[in-house]
Amino acid sequence: MLFNQPLATRLGHELTAALNSGVWTKLDIAVAWIRASGLAHLAPALEGFLDRGGALSTTVGVDLENTSSDGLRALLALGAGKSAEAFIHHNESGTIFHPKLYLLRNNESARIIIGSNNITEAGLFRNTEAALQFDLALDNPTLLATLNALDTWRDASTGLVRVLDEPLIEALEDNGYIKSEATIRAESAARRAAAKKPGTAAVKLFSSIHVSAPTIPEVPPLPNAPAAPGTSTTTTAAVSATPAAPAAAPASTGQVLLMRVRKAHVIDRPTQTQIPVAVQKSAFFNGAMSVTSAHTGELHVVSIAAASGGSGINTLKLEIPEMRTMVDPVMRFDHSSSGIQYEVYDASSPRGSAIMTALRNGLVSGVTNPTRLTVPSNLTSSTWWRFI
Image (cartoon, rainbow, N blue to C red; front, side, top):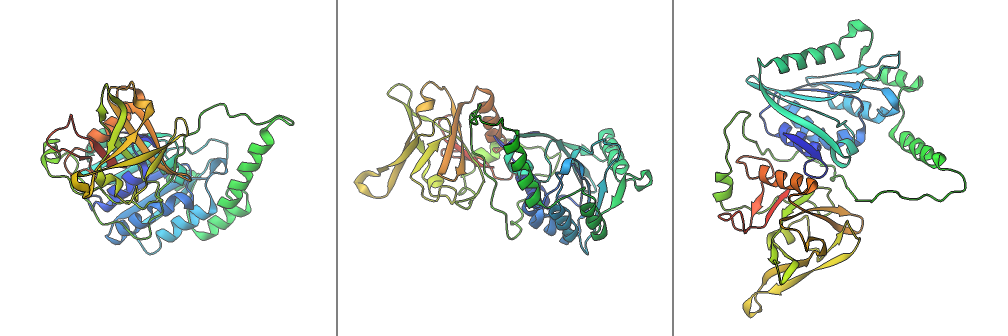
């Protein structure tokens, strides 16, 4: 499985679901950078994983001043009194420790996720990142090579590795290896300002599409176990079952909503679609009656068509001008400071294809955050939606 973040997947949500599933008993992590901003999102799931007897091993780099002292202290506190170990890997020659590897295991199988995501809020949710996930048997040569790589990265005999503890964090601070997250952000902003040519106005050369991160959870989510690795799954059960209410998400969350929408009429109303009432009433929409285009910045109102006799809502109509010439439009909704923002693409386009793939993946039995259908018995005419 390929994680295409943030368009169609978000690694932070995938890791949380895996940790909460109860399927895995060991987690090995090797990342270049860790910050408290990212670890805070994973902490409730990691604490639950460790409380259930899970074992955690983390190896982190301190290169390029991106790992923060806040992140290392949060990691140290997370593992206190639990089956957890943490290491710092650094090469004084200037070679950078740069892997991003997550390995989940139990007594029967393993799952490897390897890509570009560090344990930062941006790396887990907001940045454009890619990662591949593989489910493997314990005797698979790729798993054995992965375990060997992890062993070499935490091999203290090389002199490149030290066990993480508070004295080491203080020494890293005193010698300029790490800084606080506030200092890192301030220095980064100052560098960007200094890089501009004096006397010239800043010109934005590219488009801007807002991507938010989710609200940091306060308690571990309830377990929602995915199908065990290697289990045969089909879309039949998910499609034929009556769809449950969509997963709730706080109104201000960075959780994302993906949708495959249907045109009201290809010829007469090619820009009009309908929002399922269940979606509009969800905590994600929170009753919002307008959305903003990420393409044009224009605001579009969600209009209500009452049921016959005026009793309740029949449909919720929405004009999406960008989809006029699209054959099979798919949408991505996110929260911005101004409200709900959307992107829309034809499913045959590269970005549309990624969204459609995520929606199809949500039809598989046992998947976390499944895809819902307005007409479960009819894939073609249904509106599809999924939270990621």
